[in-house]
Figure 1: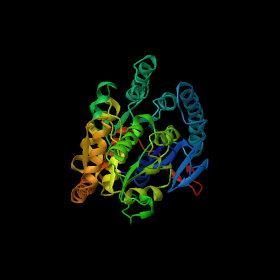
Figure 2: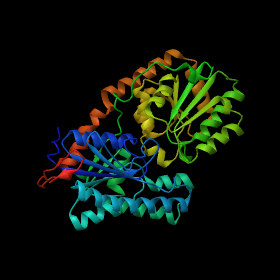
Figure 3: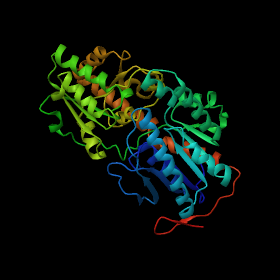
Figure 4: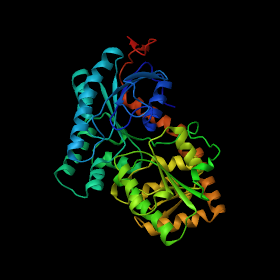
Length: 416
């Protein structure tokens, strides 16, 4: 068992999602807080997370605005430039009000090393790089090219690893990247999977109204972006409805993103809008209603190098709720789900549709797959198995340094 925090102070910097909405970051932050660390978070505002400052579960959250959700080169430049400005500014505020001994940076993007590197160089703070996304592969998946910007992504990734004292990876594929492309030492890279917390992912009674009068419901939760393959899923829905004649199936898609409106329009263009509900970004209660009502859950992530190496949170969330899954055949998706999933041929919308139908028509198989997935989570993949690995990474991060005593006052500030 890793040791307690002993008054250590950690600053999380997150650019792409607000806290506590970002589930992985919130699990990491609460784990450290419960182990005795004083935890602060810098992140953007977002729906349901509009307050610029608040304290939740003794964790101080400093939020900043973002001008837009990036789409295209100019959009990314504006978003990331604004984020860096606010991250530097708020990091100084956290240092004055609460202090910190280490910065925990969660990508994307791979630019937070600029903030962490400054405090490491001039104030001797530690830097832990939490590697969530492989940005060179993500860029290639979005734009289908390896150009100057792709090379820039590789350079920024190398800089992040070079600046890091310790790195944590979401799976073994990401760990290999840290060792090979990042050239990190083997004993400085830890695998900490994004295991779900079962107290959050509760099994609740289904809500029949979500089926919209149809016999079956297929559920999805995740980002509505290009690489998530929502267009492929909608093409599979069109095949299922128009070619297979299955008008007894409804699809509930939970999540927001830059492609949400485009996907709504695509559903209209394909003639399947009445068979699909797009909820947009919603709270956990509505998400859980949809997934608990679903007979089958689906992961249409496009088969590419990025998705093949990435572990998707949605897969383990489906499994935690005891739901059978259909997804394209990807290496990390197959590792996570194993017998809880059917695996369609990569990017084959016809095979995806036919596997969904086959599973809907086989209730006994659905039951067995759901039970397998739930058992795999409870016995191997739940967050309680990953938390000690996170604490071990922090033990390594702080080895050889004397602790700084800090306690929070009633306003969430530290006295030292």
